Length: 304
Ligand code: GLN
Image (tube, rainbow, N blue to C red; front, top):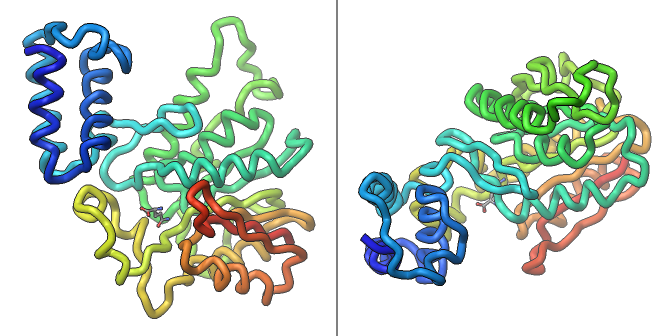
């Protein structure tokens, strides 16, 4: 089989699930992943032959993708802020809007040397991992209710740590230029909807969170690859109380942020004002709503 024939076969198999542009992007990513080629080799050499073993792997993968299993679960990762984040069923696949949230956090503090940062409801740990990579001197914590999320987060944090330890670099614990160890104690189970009593970390400079915020009634706008495979508990909230996680985050932030600390949240584009007002009513010093690149009110920052 050639690159060209694989691409045209796959596009037709995916055409009922994905628009042509997205189907093509998925197909090329499969070729890159399984055949180890660049993103343009199929253009330079469309008649290049795919080896029989690769054809087998590719056909198996296409079968799963045609059954709506997301590409990222099939290949096992999603790029996020330039880092390969390991994902599997049970954790949400990192989204581009969450990269914007992380970029906002990074642009906010001028001297990040000693920050203590919590990723609350961490899922795959993409926020914690990206922040650890960009702010190697910060102390990063991550919590989630789901044991699967904690397992995947710990894996992502530690693979960052492994990949950043150059053979000659010191592994001394006080080496402030190396990322902090992602010791298991920094990744812990916590149910945000319970009271903040008993929460194991305090004195936080920053909390970042992308909690569930899609209303049950908004499910109709979502596609089968999300609805059938991604964890509903990471996405959906009841229509009668869609901001329950943000009230919990306000309680957590009020109890555990240092004076001057801040909480950054991804929010439902239709509920940004209501989300902000939870923090305004709680007396926060400043509350700011930010739009994403599509102009949607997608992020809220509150400084205590
Ligand atoms: N942005 C995600 C989506 O629309 C939702 C993420 C979330 O609920 N926190 O698929």
